[in-house]
Image (tube, rainbow, N blue to C red; front, top):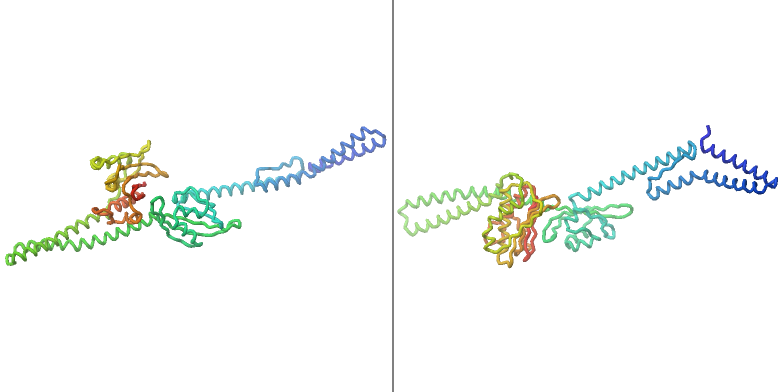
Length: 441
């Protein structure tokens, strides 16, 4: 059985032969008008045959043109031809569907990688040989407080030390950099790799904020040191105080010693005893750094927590004419925490803030609660004297203090409590402008 294409082609050929014979016969008989009509019909049928034969070429050209412009939605039909051409068009349609599937898979992979790059905690920066930035993910934007950068030189405005490190970084190198972002010191690790993509040489820089890890290691080191110190000091001082007390009792019963010598000996032993007791009290105070109880988590409301702690300082706030400001959103900020431990943290922060506001014109203390990136943030903000950059690095070190009176464990203890809450404490300060401390849960 002949297929459709051959049948149509034979039919058109016979039709053309019949028209040609009729036209010749009409011309021989001088039938001019019928001869002209038959000739025109013959030409029309010839054009139709040529168009019909070249249809496959046009279909192929259209198919390859669609591929060129990444249009894989076009399909070709073979109703005008036979089985062999139907197989060709079926194959073309199958190829088109395959290209569609490959493109969909490619788009899915692209979306997958974009989602990973956008939400990964590590900052990523990619640039070409002209130092034009072609990728800067959200983590890096948040870390550098920059929504975009055009080229590498833009890092100079963020932190010149960071810019110099990136410029000198070679593929495979890893460097630690300390940067100051909005008066906040951050320790980051940067690493560089080089790769080629479509004949373009690219460099990918990763930025990892290791501040929290360093702080955790620092706290662990201090805890170990404190445990050792307290153990040794307690073992040494306890016998001294006990012996001093015994000697005082013995001296009280000795009558043969001259009164002057007895008084000198008594005074010396009293000094030893006082110093020993002072050292014991000193040691006991700092042992609190290693004896924080596990948090008893409860549902807490930020506003209520602020009000409970602020009430402890109400007299001092009124005496010093400090403006107490509550900056709270319409919706309550609630989170999980230990009220006793967190009240201790806020007491330390508010106490520090009030001390920084002494002799400040129009002193103001702001207690702020908000949500950022799904986390609860409690802030204690003052417009006091601020903290200089050289002291910012030491401010969380146990026993370090900038005050004439103070133990120097308030902020260190606060940081450790926040660690137990799986949170962090962030401090920003500008000399003569004020300090803001954020508790992030």
